[in-house]
Image 1 (cartoon, rainbow, N blue to C red):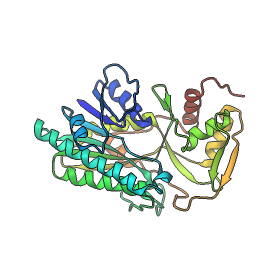
Image 2: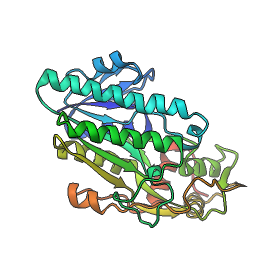
Image 3: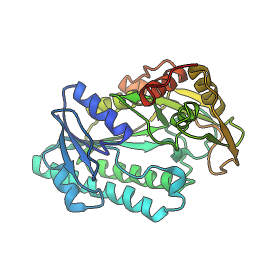
Image 4: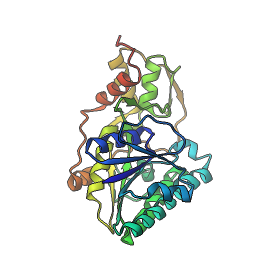
Length: 315
């Protein structure tokens, strides 16, 4: 199977590329202008998702797509709604059109796995939340991802492809020598603050907000499993989470493992963000046989610390 990975140079995309290679698949990495050093055997193609012709050329001669490209900063999107829609939604439209053209050429329905987000649930009525819960779209980022989910579902219903949407909660940890470098996410930022690679960690609110963390390698496994399970005409939606933990839990884990304090700065709570957001993953477990392999929050924190800051020892 020849698989195109959009956003292949990104944090999760990198893990997906390596997981697919480990399973013996042919991988085509789609990047914009990023010059990532992919492993041997990976073909690199360049295109911006908003370039319709470029995307069509990139999809040619592929059997399936793992779609991870797009804008993904939740808070930043609130100040740039048109940009988030232009990139995330228009890019997905272009990709779906390109896949339909490839299906027409090959005579075989395509297979698509889409990286969505837990933020589509907004403030859920109960936790853990399952995939049947109503979406509560409180930010442009969440709304743009929900629009993509809908487009994918409608396109799958035409029979030109089979699709899976993975609503990823909070990916963490490291894969193939790469840790998370995004300092807008709590685990990399807390670890960086502990080893003095960042001045402090800013906490919005009192630190009791709970999120669900999942190892990036386990996310990549879900992408590979979903590719093989896709059926033309069907669109499946699954949650991906594993280890619920509060902000304070993360800070405590970082301090315990590194033996170093995490300098904190407190800011106001962000009203649009849920106090608790955790995943019911029973559906993907029952259908695809997926299960998290990481043991808990400590695994994720230790992985981030040792990979991102290998020269720092515990105190």
